[in-house]
Length: 116
Length: 116
DNA sequence: TTGACGTGATACCATTTGGTATCTAATTAG
DNA sequence: CTAATTAGATACCAAATGGTATCACGTCAA
Image 1 (cartoon, each protein chain N blue to C red):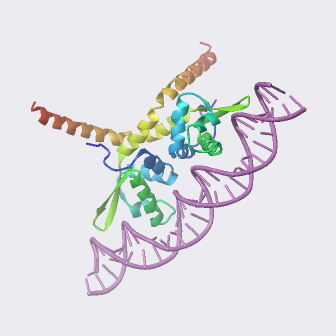
Image 2 (image 1 turned 90 degrees about the horizontal axis):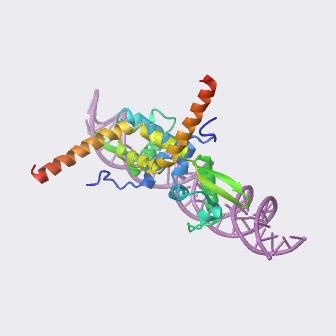
Image 3 (image 1 turned 60 degrees about the vertical axis):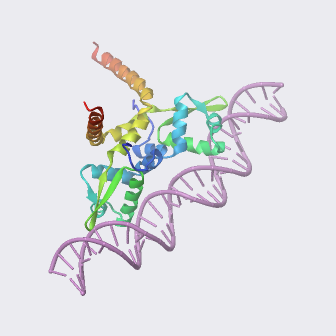
């Protein structure tokens, strides 16, 4: 019934996104699921540290890990990302008019420049 | 000239969003600009603590504070929120097909239920 | 001018966080 | 079986974080 079955709340999701290493991991997993070692190879950091990040990301529901024989594959859970995006879009009505005003100002500048 | 004039990078913005109190403040400021004391009155927390949160939010570019006589008004900067939303939307292509698949499954359930 | 009020800044404390080092368990290859 | 590899779990450390208490400064009103 619930499209996001895990117990990740908005808080743990934003927390998972609040670290640059973890956002980089999100981007990496966007290219396909990876083992802990594969992820760690991209960072100047021990495997244990990367594993900790992955645990935080799992708690935030943005990553799901799945044991596969000897290794463990970590893949992105985009639905948690969507929930964070949805929260931010509550405020779209605030930035929409701002962008419109900005665009208008730019257009006026262009008009002056072009001597239209 | 710059639509986001402050030096707030994505990192500081996500950090500013990673605390439930601060996200609540974002929602509060959505209703209009408020003084530190007005914000603090809504929390079981000292004014100094709220001020600290507001400083973090300023660093993240999501709040702009403006002295007004004896008090200081804090208002939302929605453009920083938009930048965070834009980052998340990089991954929309991952959740889009997921939602489509989910919708299809729901439709099939409905079909079975309706004996259409 | 004097006092009250709202604010900013600082010092300090407890907890959390990001990281390493290390140990143990499980799976694959020889 | 044995050894190598991959992963998970702890213990521990330094730094950052969230909070309070407190002080000093500018502004408004009497």
